[in-house]
Image 1 (tube, protein in one colour):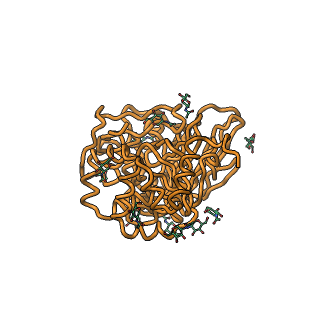
Image 2 (tube, helix red, strand yellow; image 1 turned 120 degrees about the horizontal axis):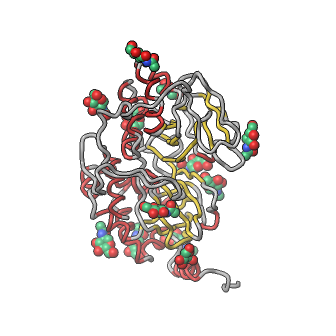
Image 3 (cartoon, helix red, strand yellow; image 1 turned 90 degrees about the vertical axis):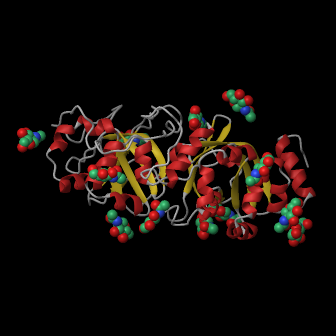
Length: 381
Ligand SMILES: *[C@@H]1O[C@H](CO)[C@@H](O)[C@H](O)[C@H]1NC(C)=O
Ligand SMILES: *[C@@H]1O[C@H](CO)[C@@H](O)[C@H](O)[C@H]1NC(C)=O
Ligand SMILES: *[C@@H]1O[C@H](CO)[C@@H](O)[C@H](O)[C@H]1NC(C)=O
Ligand SMILES: *[C@@H]1O[C@H](CO)[C@@H](O)[C@H](O)[C@H]1NC(C)=O
Ligand SMILES: *[C@@H]1O[C@H](CO)[C@@H](O)[C@H](O)[C@H]1NC(C)=O
Ligand SMILES: *[C@@H]1O[C@H](CO)[C@@H](O)[C@H](O)[C@H]1NC(C)=O
Ligand SMILES: *[C@@H]1O[C@H](CO)[C@@H](O)[C@H](O)[C@H]1NC(C)=O
Ligand SMILES: *[C@@H]1O[C@H](CO)[C@@H](O)[C@H](O)[C@H]1NC(C)=O
Ligand SMILES: *[C@@H]1O[C@H](CO)[C@@H](O)[C@H](O)[C@H]1NC(C)=O
Ligand SMILES: *[C@@H]1O[C@H](CO)[C@@H](O)[C@H](O)[C@H]1NC(C)=O
Ligand SMILES: *[C@@H]1O[C@H](CO)[C@@H](O)[C@H](O)[C@H]1NC(C)=O
Ligand SMILES: *[C@@H]1O[C@H](CO)[C@@H](O)[C@H](O)[C@H]1NC(C)=O
């Protein structure tokens, strides 16, 4: 056998695994960075059982330093209060399938995890993580576009492979909490106005096209005289039921039936810019507890379903006769976000900003369990 092309780390773990038999337990307890994960797994009886029989899995293993940061955050208290939370969080770190680092390319993949517990996720087949190679690093995105980086790749064990990661993944939040933190408060308020909170938060497997606050503001005049019924009709044109459509599923020409009844059409121009009807997708793939949210730059109109004009660089309004208003519609009763979402996946887009300026999460009635997870992750940066 030739060793000279095998990276040093791989070789070291290969030797370690051979020496101590290749079980998960041996591989975990043989790695000094993973002592916390090892003890957490051992206090989650269901998980221990699940893992000891598992084949063909990938474990994203937060280092002890990653756990230290988590445990020094408010999440620590929540883990004490909710006995199911630790197991759910650990299940979210176990991917279905063996993914060696070199199988993760610069094209995003959305990989199902073992998180299927309906108290924490409503994505059929398991909540997903987004895996992608960025430069020379292997990166995973979780809730709120929070990223973690592989610091030690390809530790083999007899059920699959382990990658050591530098921060704990963020459980995808509810739609409402995500809209709050992502500063999509006009949509959040509109959802509340039309009594649709439970429909968007609790329906499994949704794809939601979420217009920015500016999009709502720019057509404010058209919204002023809408009945709640008309508004609900427009909002429901932004939601696809029974399909979680990540960017990898949205091909040029894809037509998706919305809850409103009519279809939206995906167009991808030659520059790779993605449009929904005539609106441009500005931030794709924000994972939420029951599906995925894509931020778009215009409000969609079920009565105006044409696509973008050729070589458009931004979206066009679906409400053509409307004019803008001074206040962002539907936001008067909205809570102030206490933390922020990460910038877009490639770090190129505009960051959403925190209106409080501070990264310290607050426990409020509005911010649910998941929001605290997001907030906790902010402290780790
Ligand atoms: C590894 O350990 C397991 C359980 O302790 C045992 O069943 C198996 O035979 C061992 N395999 C090797 C190759 O030693
Ligand atoms: C796991 O490995 C540790 C250290 O090698 C050992 O003490 C422990 O008994 C093992 N546990 C199981 C369930 O095999
Ligand atoms: C986590 O690991 C550190 C050492 O890295 C140790 O001091 C600490 O007790 C561990 N905590 C838990 C909960 O296992
Ligand atoms: C893993 O995914 C396969 C399909 O790719 C599925 O058949 C299997 O049930 C999944 N395993 C678990 C434990 O969810
Ligand atoms: C491992 O899991 C992946 C993803 O579910 C699946 O495509 C593949 O066929 C599985 N391989 C084996 C050997 O079970
Ligand atoms: C999943 O949906 C059920 C009802 O369908 C709901 O009670 C539960 O809260 C939802 N889970 C999450 C994490 O949103
Ligand atoms: C990855 O690239 C960065 C610069 O882009 C460099 O600083 C770093 O050392 C590289 N890491 C590895 C493991 O090659
Ligand atoms: C990861 O997130 C940090 C902010 O939390 C950001 O600065 C960085 O660009 C992100 N990295 C990637 C690869 O997205
Ligand atoms: C919904 O609106 C009502 C009245 O405007 C407000 O009191 C409530 O806090 C809002 N609910 C949410 C979840 O934003
Ligand atoms: C909205 O209603 C007001 C009062 O009824 C009216 O003056 C105004 O023209 C209407 N605006 C639009 C855009 O229809
Ligand atoms: C979504 O689809 C499910 C299953 O087809 C159905 O039961 C539910 O009523 C639908 N929800 C909405 C809001 O359309
Ligand atoms: C997508 O389809 C449109 C027309 O159907 C075409 O003009 C455009 O070039 C296609 N985009 C790509 C990337 O092929």
